[in-house]
Image (cartoon, rainbow, N blue to C red; front, side, top):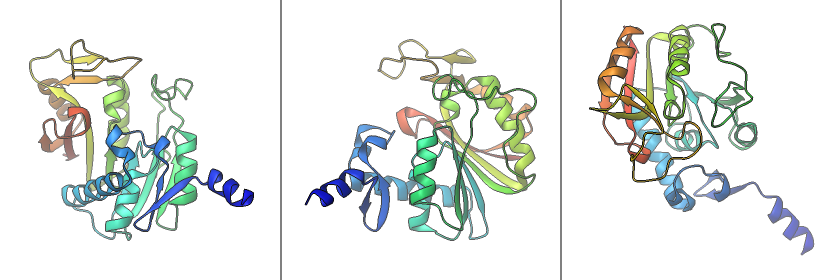
Length: 243
């Protein structure tokens, strides 16, 4: 009995409908994600959305930046196990969990130790020498969910510039952030926004629609689609490709 209790206490995941998912304390989304069935369904729905919006096939290589404890990877495994997937995050425990319980010959995970005032304050500085450890022209799709929404504008630009290096010719980017009309070009933790208290660095990064669209155009991207307020906490979704 003691051995069984110890084994349960050491358990690092739940199994739901055949999939390993993180324990409730490691699900960084809203409170609704504490429900196992909601978590699984949301993972599947997100994966289906990615497959449709980014036109993913079995030969696709997708880079998921900010993968956390693998919600997107879990969903993709459930609906299409044959793609090539690379998950990256600044949280070492999250990456270790994903590598141990989700990693295989097609799904790999690695840590990115870059600075972020909210999530990785002591990370490596993002400067002119910044590059992801990804080969040139090797990625079909880059997915960032709630990453640019917690990142300085200059760091977002640096990320996007390196994406141009690693994307294949017809590659696409899907990202979310807070985008509104009739607001300042760029704001961190804007007052009286989202009906919640914004606390700590980079809790909410918000852009004026016209400003971020001009920025993306000047960086050499086409905006394929824009979905206002459809994502977590009323973030908007943008899909891009290279000009």
